Amino acid sequence: MVQVMAQRALADAMELMANAMSQEAVSRTADRVAQEARRGGEDEMRLERFMNNKPPIFKG
Image (cartoon, rainbow, N blue to C red; front, side, top):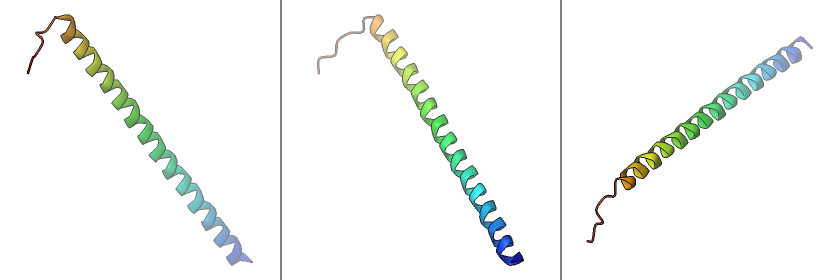
């Protein structure tokens, strides 16, 4: 009986650990996605400023 309770406690601890690790991975992924979105916005602003300066048209 004690062994079964110990095994159950170990299984519960492992489940909690796995859940914490997966939540951390999801959080890191969301942070990366947000960071990439911010970078994309900066790139768009840079291109917009460039185009507002009436760059020459390249005819290649």
